[in-house]
Length: 399
Image (cartoon, rainbow, N blue to C red; front, side, top):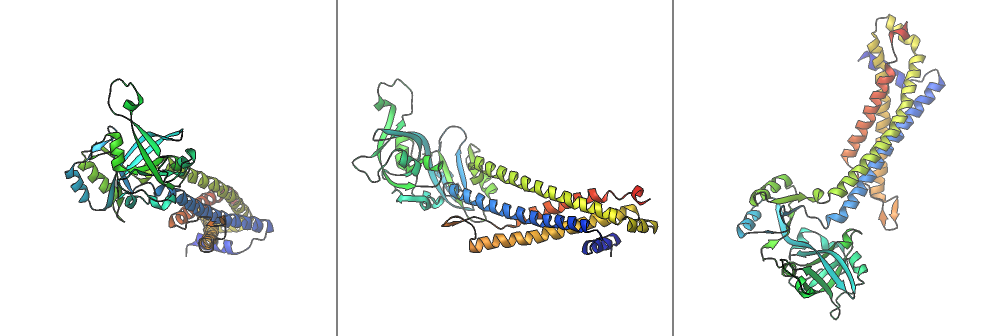
């Protein structure tokens, strides 16, 4: 057995003659246990909250979406449609048109996005899951589905044939405009459903049939502003993106779900990093206690170290004794803390011990990534702390 490790293990499992050293070592070990457990629980809770937050937008965002790089719209030829259908990994696709327009209802108005969708849109995005009132629109009809925020702002009534919602879309082209009739294409539309997801999304979209949107914007039948894709499980996003770019001669922008919600993902990742750094700082402060305990133990064992030095043990090996001892304490305490943290997370997942509301438990997710992060953090910081403390063993101390 490695000599420094053998001595370090003996020092770890045996008590010092000084009760002060034993108390400080115990406090340091307890701090490592609590710090490791708390860091794992917090990361698991944030993973749950992150997944919960993203679940709202996931019903509205496809796996992949292509839009025009130049201009608002583009044309799709029959040949391009056939090439897209041959791409492995695409489960289904939906043509869409998005445009910012004006909606009027009983003297109230709101400017937001009209989103024209085809009959298979609900197979690409699970938008029907978010319907709060009413039902999803029927294809090739003037029916629309509005967000709850728009529904409240306009005080809309569903299926109100006598008092329909009106949509106004600026006419394309140039020239002098003499009256409002020349400036806008308008249509009476019928709200049949209300979706509720989040405050931002609830005020963003009014879903309508794709043909209605094409008529209002005076688009050609094969002209759209985007195509949204649902991928098969295990499909390679990067490969599919390259194939789509090739089909459209690199004239389109391809974005995945994370890129479509770039600001949201950045915000959540920033919050997670900040939270991790705060708890890491707490662990660092705890490990100062460990370093102090090791230094006190070095002083307490000075006579033993001097004897070993006189017997021919090198100073670097004497330092390794306390480096190994600090690493053993860190790894042991971190492992115990992680086990406790895992138990807490699994109990919350199974028994819903902590509730946000009477019907919704606090979301937590157990994953290996958080486990590795905690282990790496605890052990690396513990190793550095032990290395600094063990450097106090010098020839001057032993003389």
